[in-house]
Amino acid sequence: MMTLNRKLLAAGLAAACASTAAMAGMVQPARVDVDLVNLTAGGDMLSARYAPNKNEFIGCGVRKFDDGAGGATAFGFCQAEDEKGERAFCNTDNEDLLDAIEASADYGYVSFSWDEKTQRCTRIGFSNQSFYVPPNVGSNL
Image 1: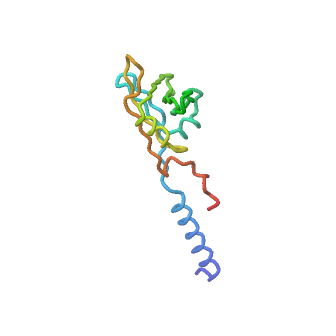
Image 2: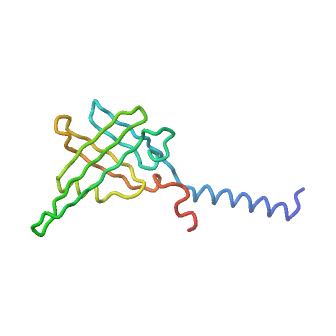
């Protein structure tokens, strides 16, 4: 028969394990995939950064330049390479697509598609969700 101290210890360990599992949250890695047939690319930045190969990357960026007349000229781009070395790149000056790029956040899932002849971006999407954030971020909360 268990003593009271052992029962309390067992209950405490069970509670600690349950709370750790509850705090860990869902993780959903999404490795970079470049599809040169359908002209799409997607993957999450964290999985790309810590991929076991030296090829993988994905992301988008915006560059803005003073136009000399009190305004600015802007262009954006997205780029990716998967573990097989397949690369994708597109660029845009479409304001709505630039807004999509600027709405991105750390660790998010990136997806884009492009026109094969012009290399212009035809779609840019981001999914900023908790399951793309590394497990150690916010661990001191």
